[in-house]
Length: 180
Image (cartoon, rainbow, N blue to C red):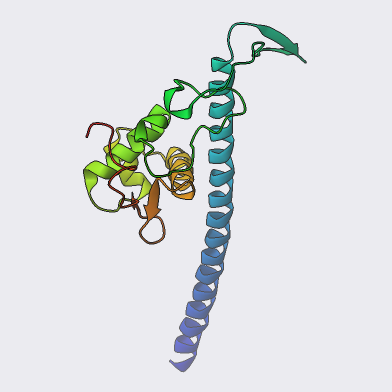
């Protein structure tokens, strides 16, 4: 009887060791997946930003290798950030917050994000912001949204109330909804 118990202990230990090894592999794969998704989100944002910039550039086109891309040929004079409907090439699209600046100076997508957080009245995670704004809650899309929220935090429009919890910056004059 003792040999049967010993055999069961041996098999249990082997199964436990195999399970631990699989958990380590899963952890490593989860890390790789998170890195790949973050890289994908950054590339998506970059592609969208370039498409936005090139879309604003006008109708003139230039051959660039195998692709034809639009380019801006006119140089605009000084443009006030508050009155610019779209950011010209080379201009910061999300200006730093300062007293007296309105949410209306932000691109529409950023205005919508600030408005969602103002309406919520409490901190939200990126996935909650995506759901509240009617955006996709796919992991890669939420990562792209998180990058936009972080940009708004870096520029002073929003604050992070703990890791990954976004909220308004607590100012009455700048980071409030354009509807008010």
